[in-house]
Length: 88
Figure 1 (cartoon, rainbow, N blue to C red):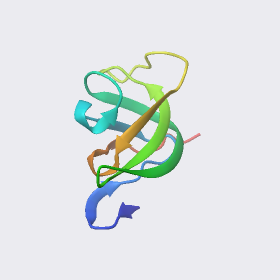
Figure 2: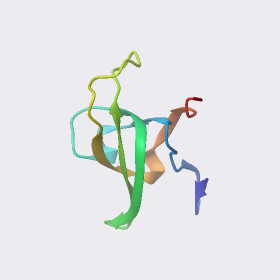
Figure 3: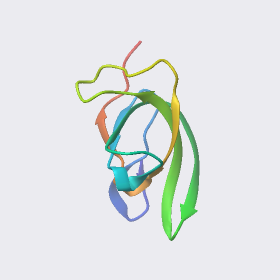
Figure 4: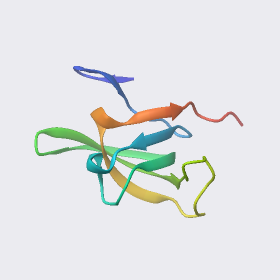
């Protein structure tokens, strides 16, 4: 699913692994990699669209960092889906 004029932006789905640069999410330090467990509402912040997501934080090698999902507000146009949802 694409968002308006941002043809390359994809709204993540449950199970997607996403990457977001530090300047494109609130709040944290460094690149954020998450396996999405919840997709929330869209919000407008400073004339840009953001999305509330929750997910399991992943290390650079793809292994899970912890057991508890973390919330993040991500800039929709900057979200990069790096893998499709895992099949059950």
